[in-house]
Length: 338
Picture 1 (cartoon, rainbow, N blue to C red):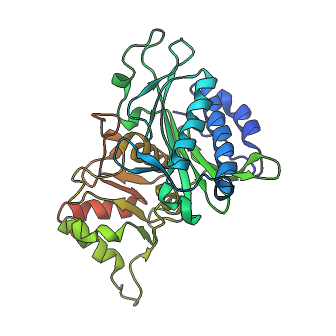
Picture 2 (picture 1 turned 90 degrees about the horizontal axis):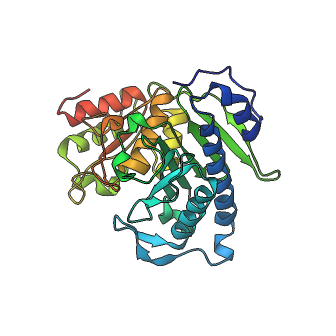
Picture 3 (picture 1 turned 90 degrees about the vertical axis):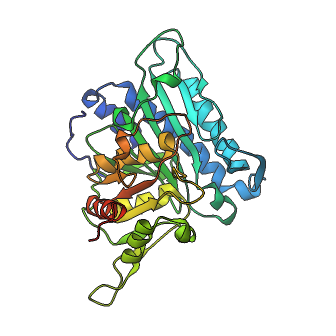
């Protein structure tokens, strides 16, 4: 576990902050991994801003391993992230939403980590200038040297050593945790640096925001529909239990729940009985961040970080956000009521 450091002053740049934190980390190279992801996200932020002007909008013509149509920006984002870590020498293999198989990139002793990444979360928003994200996590390799079975080294999320996300919106925000705390940095475009803007983020115990794709409402289990009905029903003061928000970008909806409280959920439905969101590079990384900030993440019946992946693109039902809201959701899923 990382020692909780004194809260830094907002405005410090990410490079300097990481240099100051290295002595508190369980492994100093974790700082370099976060900085590498930050560098890749700067490239993506630049290209996302100009995508409509350089022909990067629209479909690429293929599908990713889970059947979603690939956008041109999906393919480009995957290339940017993979290239960044190929050059770093610290990562042995990468699992990406945009690649059918795990990609082995280095087998030396210095390549001590596995990267799981969704390079461009919410890509359905690319053509309408909506919010987008990148979601990532790192696991430490249990073996070094010769490439053995890197895929066999993938473990439950409880064993990841760092995770985070980048949200590309009105500003670009990088949020990460190496355990012990969650920090957010905002990209200052004029100087090209991430500056500390959200030190030591704590997720409220209870919130008033509810995010889900209600277009799937009639395909949900009756107990999940019951939670949704409760969430949107008038309370004793004449308002609603929760204010409804849904952007179509997981990172953006999670970011609201993390900062302001509430719950995001994507449950199983008739077409996706095991859920639609991917465990390794969507659900587990955000579950790790949520728990480090005092929140919670559940499949509805199980802690997400306790789920061991059976395959690279394994899916799970997902609910994440404020601890009490997730607990309430679990009670509904189990057939109970408030």
